[in-house]
Image (cartoon, rainbow, N blue to C red; front, side, top):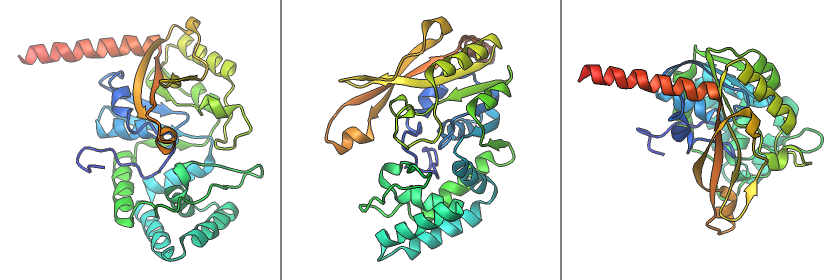
Length: 301
């Protein structure tokens, strides 16, 4: 990653929108009072928006409480977290597999955010997986040791500087978050991948019912709240996920997300296109925002 241009991502996370965040932001107004992420994960949109100086404050939420505890450490205690990661990273040398298992066992008992960051940096495909007992059970990627301490320290410090003092952190059900939103907010939603959200796969803790989710979106429309949703999509060979219904009157766009990690591992060249849905309120606000911006540019000329 180029430190001068790239967005810092302290949390390795499968399915992160880091690569396409700039494309998504092009469809947002030039100024937003608060950006809300009910399914934040690695909060790639919030980080990208903070770097662009177009959002005043943020609400980062994820039902996965361990993830939010890690976010609290990143934002509020960056040096302590960086020191803990550095100790773990250096202490693993020469016994990486055994050490990973030891940290994983300890995390399942104590839920320490530093241990969690180390596990995410080392585990296969940076994927959060749990067994039926709610224990983290992903295995280490033996081809890599995770980000080096100096690099991780920079990422943590940079994100802390971007988000500290202007970010609300919660671990609520997404419906509770949406209930707390107003017309001053812009809500970006990237719910768990539909292919696993309703199955026995334990990669994701929250389960999101499609019909219930659509009802929540309809309620946001009724309240004239701006929102964008990354939801279904396709590759060159197949489609995945159920599209959002026409009656919501959303504007559907396709965003090229490049080759998926899975396709790369299998030696395939399938390109993924993700659907981005924009609410009527967001489309209207973005159009107005651009008109104001263009008027200001003309007046300067």
